[in-house]
Image (tube, rainbow, N blue to C red; front, side):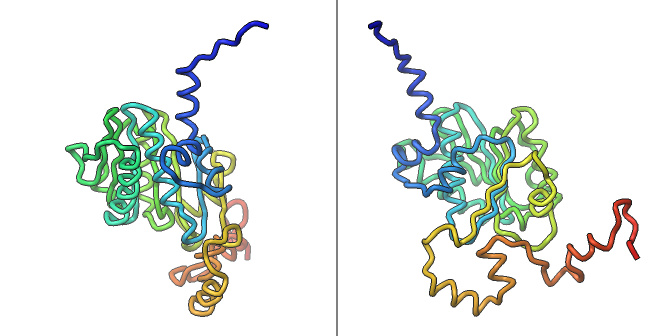
Length: 255
């Protein structure tokens, strides 16, 4: 029997680039089944519509660190509605980099940033369109709490992916039937891979706690925050479904 020649560097590279293996073996994080599914997703455009407290920011931080660690000189950009939220995301990423035993420092240019020894960077951006321009060749763009990010910021962020043909992740719980997060989820078609994770698919929140929240929050708000349902907000005078039903295919009111 002929001996099989194993390309050790190739095997090592394949294992290193498996984000689930990376999370378990290198970061000591044990993802659940849906988190594994998300970590393994290699789609160009991904939407995660998930319950509160599922761990979306933690999983996305692992994805960011995995990408930066596996691909030298890569650029990962994280945008959130506020500077504070971007800072919190970078803190999660920084803690994971420390677990890897790597030196932790900023990139010297951006206040909310992290640079790895291989030259890769993770940069957190504030939620203002006027303050985010200037980045290019972004390998991975993560928009956290995307339902609360203004459409104009989203439109300013997208061109950053062009040169590197980078990947885009939108993460959020719903917030009304409006905005790019809702529209891409409902009408984005095959251009997006969608993950929906309601609270009924994981058991980290006690059932009694959930019933208390349902009572205090009200049914509509509870279904939005925990069951991933897009509900009309108080700011919308008319429910979006009713408006859409009242308009015909040519954009005229169906009276």
